Image (cartoon, rainbow, N blue to C red):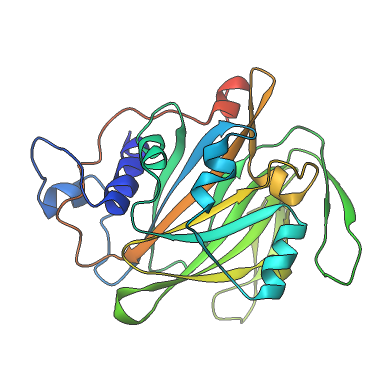
Length: 282
């Protein structure tokens, strides 16, 4: 229920206003969050904007005013892997604002709080099985073919508080695959090992980058429509009725306190991603 309205919260923060009958008080907002938001934590909102592959809004227009992220080498490497990243300041195109408020085209809205945990993975897509793509982790190297079963794309995010209310967010592509397995990992005080059940994942730290987000900034991550069989295509392509749909992950981050007094209440229907519905559940 709360996920669809988080997309509206993203829209409200970018556009600067949302028409509501009554502005809820901070206690009302916090009452809808589980667990209660710690006063010294960080909050990350995310939602996936989704349109047919090659849609002009997601493949071109929304990127026109976005500022590039990372070093020139990092940007070149991301582009080689079909990935697009940028920071949009302010509201962005009006059509994009409307898309974020749409129950048909905005999916997977979630709110994450960070205090005890340092990072988390935002799911982005479930590609076809088996999943085949090529990845290039070095500009001097050649693309390496990859084939995975039961793959699930995602983005690891690790937010840290920065100066002037800004938040530094480390982002790193991840592709989980296969069944959950038991692993021995060092315990919290490094005095021994504990068994943990985890899903195997392909990690790409060489494709990681850091974005610094202010209160009015939105981080955009997506794919290039003309680069199939890349990591970007795996992470940001869904399907509905046998047709591919292009996705853009929209991320905003801020300190948990003080809470914004004009956020709409966390209510409203939730809609699962279209590829999850097509597959009968995610």
